[in-house]
Image 1 (cartoon, protein in one colour):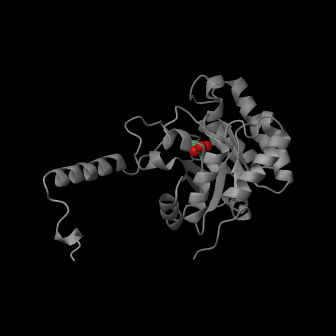
Image 2 (image 1 turned 45 degrees about the horizontal axis):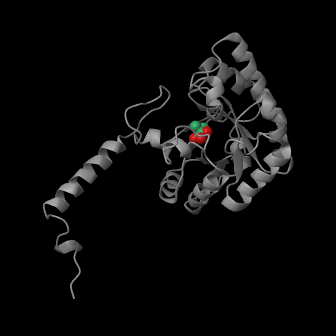
Image 3 (image 1 turned 120 degrees about the vertical axis):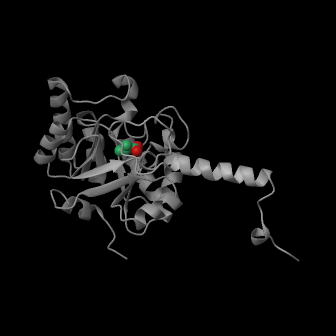
Length: 268
Ligand code: KIV
């Protein structure tokens, strides 16, 4: 087995020749495949709400749902570092809440780090969690839990005032004690500037090539979500078509009596 990826492994990859790879995972079979493929970090994102559970956004996701999916992912992993997303309202109210919920999520799920959204406004929560030795990954730029405030899923940091805010968020996350930072949907020039300024690794999603690593939602990578595709997504395979073909063939074979055959049949 190649060496287990730990938090120090990830921080040591900052600025290195090899970029950090991260994908989302929500269950054991996918986790096993991605772990075996050599993905450095598996993120059990609260995107599970929209991608798997069919919610309109990530806001309804609960701590219990996150723990359930993360336990499944952890059971499929031998090498990757598993990161669990803290869902909406599990860390925003107080530092006490943030610590208690982060602790519970690590204890009950088996994940090795938590991720939460926000910059300057969440520095106390990040600091409180990091101070009890739970590794925290930050997430700035487009933060999906703020969808209503942002008025939709839009690129952030295109105008000067937003740029300054995002830079301040990045610095606040690092100063608060996060070990890595996800930057979502920001211009590549700003992501490059932040990556240069920070001593912790940056992981981009729609943030261009200059980040220390990249993350995507696995269902986007596999083409499982239909025709809509954000600009930053690269679809590596059209699994929706593959699954649809298999299901159509099954339906046809059952209806016409071609399945099961002798090969799938038991005898006395
Ligand atoms: O929930 C999630 O999947 C995420 C990634 C998009 C970074 O936060």
